[in-house]
Amino acid sequence: MRIQPSRSSSFVFLFASLIGAQNIFAQGVIHPFGYYLPKPSEPNFSHVRWIEFTNYIPFGKTVPAYVTLRVSNNSAWQNFAHLRYQLKGRHFQFRTTNRNGRSYKFKGEFVLRKEKALAENLAAKLDGNNSITVLAGIFQTIQTGKILRAERLLFYFAIGE
Image 1: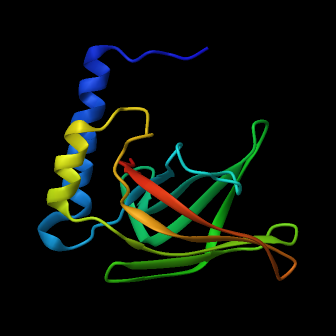
Image 2: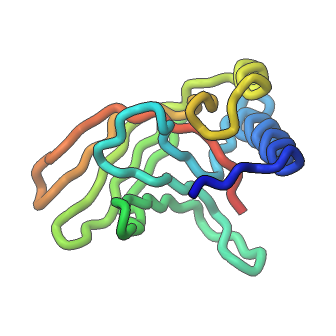
């Protein structure tokens, strides 16, 4: 069953997306904290659900920045913490810890400027298919040290907690 958002919840989501787009590219500097969700209109054979980049934990505390990757199929999901990550200018890459011989690696860049994000966001649908691409790169699935899959993924931004 698909839940249809009300007009007021659609407005709140669109407003939050506008604020998120402003925040991520504020004053020409990338402020990357939040969730990056793969665009539903693009192939995603690795079953990435989201990449979280944050320095926040519950109860209002901040910690050093960290990356969490969630992958899933229809019946279960797993979170993978970063082993290491690097953010240099627009370039962002990370590698996850190993779980049962499997790990993941991403290497990409932020691809959008604030003005373009705001213009596109006004016309975007709320289901993610036409949302703004803000992060693009190569995502690799690694099993026991060998690359099983490498694919280009496009991500849109969602505000985190």
